[in-house]
Every structure is written in C-alpha cells, then in structure tokens.
Image (tube, each protein chain N blue to C red):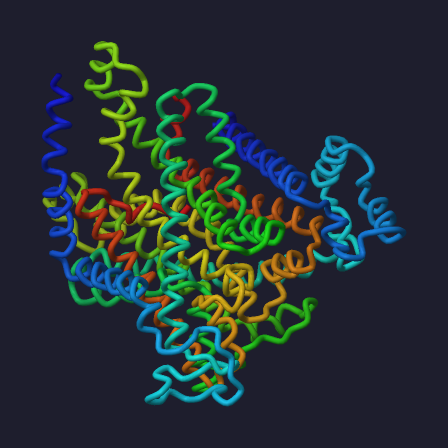
Length: 297
Length: 318
C-alpha cells in the first residue's frame, strides 16, 4: 500500500517536478545557454521547411560559389545551391536521426540493463561479456561495416546508431539496478508477493530512471557526433539530402576561396553539440548525478 | 597478485574471442560474401571461382572460422583483395604511422592534461578555471573533423604557416613524418587533453575535500607540499583507468582525423578497405583495433594494481 501512495503522489507532482528540474537547470548560466541553444535548434528544425528561401536541391550553374549577399545570406556552394537553406534544413536531418536513434538506444539499453541487473547469474555474465566485446570494437568501424553492407538510408542508420550507442546504456542501467535491488523496499515488495514485472515497473524503473535519462542525454550528443562523422566520411545520409557533415566534406576542398560554404554548417553542428552537452551537464547536476569522472564509452 | 593478473589477461582474451566471433558472424550474416562484395558486378565465372578459391570460401563456415582464428593467433591475417598482397604487408607501415601519430599526441596530451587539470582544480571557479574549462568544453565537444577542418582553414589557408594536407608516402621515415604531423597531432591531442583534464580536475577536487587532506591542512602542512605529497598521488591513481578508456575511445576520432589530413595510417586504411569492400582487411582491422582497446585497458588495470597497495589486497580477498 505504501508504495502505491508514493507513486500516486509522484504522479500528481510530475509536471511540477519537471518544471522544478528545468528551473534548476536554467539557474546556472551554462545550463541556460545550453537550453536556449537546443530550443533554438529544435524550433528551427520544426519551421525550417516553411522559411527556407530556396529549394535545397536546386542546382544552378549561374549561382556557383557566390559570396554571401542579400539574396544568398550564407552564399552558395559549388553546385549553386543556397547555403542558408541547406544549413537550416541540415539541423532537421541531424535532430530527426539522432532523436529516434537515442530513443531506440534508451529503450533497448535500459531494458536489457535492468533485466541483467535483476536476474544476475549466468545470463548476466554472458550478456555483459558480449556487451564488453561490442564496446571494444571501435564504433566507427562497426558502423561503417553495417552501413557499407546494408546501404545508407535513414531506415538503416537510425536502428544501427540506436543499437551501437545503446550498449553503454546497458552498463549504466545494470549498475543502477544493482544499487536499487538490495534496498529494503524491493525486499518488502518481494515479500508482499509482487511479480517480477510489477517490481520492475513500480519499484526499479522509477529509481533508475534518472541515471538512464542522464546517460541517454549524453548518448544523444555522442550520437550526433558519430552520425555527422559518418556523413562527413561519405557513409551517412546520401546526397542531395541537406546534412551538415556532408556539406562540410563537400565544401572542404574549396574552402581556400569559398570558406562561407564550410563555416555555416560548422557553426550549426558545433553549436548544437555544445548546446546538447551543456544541457545534459545541467540535467545531470539538477538530478544530482556526477558524470564528470566517467569516461566516454 | 599473479593470479589476479592472469585473470585479467584471461578476461581480455575472452573479449577478443567474442570480438572475432562477432566480426566473423557479422560478415557471414550480412548479405553477400567477401568475394561477391568485392567483385560486385563482375562476380561470376572464372574471376569469382578464383577469388573463392583464394579465400577458401568453398569450405563450411565453422572450418573457415577455425582456420582464420588460428592464423590470426599466429599473426597471419590473410590476404588483401584490393592490395593483392598479404594483409600483414599492407598493415606494417600503416601501424607504424599511426603509432607515431598516437604516441606523439599522447606524450603531449597527458602531461598537459595533468597540469591543466590541477590548475583548474586548485583555482576552482576562479578565473583560470573558468577560462580553461570553457576551452576544454569547446575542444572536447566539437567533432574531430570540424576542429581539424578549422585548423586547416585558419593555420594553413589564412595564416599560411603550415601545409594543410599532408602528402607523405605510407613508407615515409620517422623524421619525414615528424615534420608533417604538427596539425594532426594538435587536432588529436586537443580533444584528448580536454577529456583527461576534466577527469583530473574532478579527481583532484574530490581528494581535496577528503578527511586526510583536511587533516593535513589542520596540521599545518605547507600548501604546495600537501598538494604534491598527499593530493596528487591519490588523485591521479583513479584517473589512470579513465584515461585509458578515453585513449581507446579516441581510436574512432583518429580514423576521422587521419582522413581529414590524408595521413596514411590505420584509420585511413579502415575507410579505404571499406570503400574497396575488402572484407578480409576489415576483419583484420576489427581484431587489431579491439586488441589495442583491450590492451590499453589491461595495462591501465595492471598499473593501478601495481601502484595501489590497498586495491591489491582488496581484490585478492574478493
């Protein structure tokens, strides 16, 4: 009964609590800047198809490599496409792919981690060995292999990224479950005869959620880094999709005289990654989790 | 103690075994085998037969795995399809080049990270900390290919100080390499230093708040003596493991950096072999890179064990 009361109480205060966390995050300048940057990018991604002044794939020999001007705010690229249009649409690609990728990573990584922490024993040992082995293959090699064999559509990229960035979450979720599982309220739930499912849902998930969410926020920025690196190397989304990594890699060869077409996507991508990082940091601090001593695995 | 070391090595070997299984099974399960993938549209008739024979694809998969694994264990990685020579010959100069790049970056990065970490921790939330911490956050979050591109744009193109694109044959001598790797080294060590400096900082802060440091302060131990005698040894020890993980994680970043600077190392070989669809080389690279990762972590574990007498007895009792 007591645990039910607590969960009801929590539900009532859920919105209030989320607001409280946001307020704590925004109370420090770094958190406020991070939140503002992420919000800016999300809003821009939502409205970019309606405010884009040109067609992102319209190639024109008359407008090749124009310097920034009133018509083309950020200039044009080597195929005569408007860099401003492609830059604001690039954020849409990056955010869509990495948002759904992180969601997949959180779901499978979190659930498998909780499961392993709960059952322990042989199953846990075997799963953790395999996760360790996956961790020791450099992500870039594994991603490149998958993408080169299965193609570079977003239907392949999103689950592949989700899978590869989820294995680190398995460890965090498992460790958090281990911490919780020895506590008295789990023992008493067991004694009351609650099923495993009900224990996972009502007792464990509310207690490990914070740790997993913080990890997921971190994964989000790493996934963005990984995704844009793949595009940069030519193994991410395929042209003419507007994508920052792809734009940087295309414009790089010409940057000695047309630097504007490389600066715009660099500013877009760097600001979004920094924004997500600052937000994730502030989020972790607001929840009282210290992640500064953790290595990026 | 010896038992513990053996156990760690055993765990590392098991991990490598699983990695070899994963890469092998992955290549088996994903559509196409090494020959049809490599030959693409020309995968028929005599060319396909010759290739299948060359790689021994006509025997069952488990036999091939055992063959391949035992050859790898002896240090023979097989035959490169695109290079048309044994993979070992392809790897040799690449390993050397990457090793030069990585060791120079590490030699610069680690001492710099320790110094920066200590400065930011001792002047916590003061001007030096705020300045250095802001720079480290920037350099650790911005992707490698962006910082590398910006370095080329600013240092090579706008200022004209250094050549932007490194043009060196893969068999260049050590001295030829050194003069050409300034920008790649800066790009790699920037990120590495930032990651490690942050860890050193939080580790030092933690130790500074501990009881025995408070005790030392109360006893009147001079400040700098306390920092060097009591704080640093205790703060740097736990950082070893994290530093190892960071170095291993950066292997992926090295791939990207090598591509940006056109540097003939292992990283560019990864991209080349995947673009050429040369699966035997990809498999070899997976094992090599995973061994580096496992090796670095093993060394870190052993170093921590050797340096920390407390951990030694704890682990044995466990």
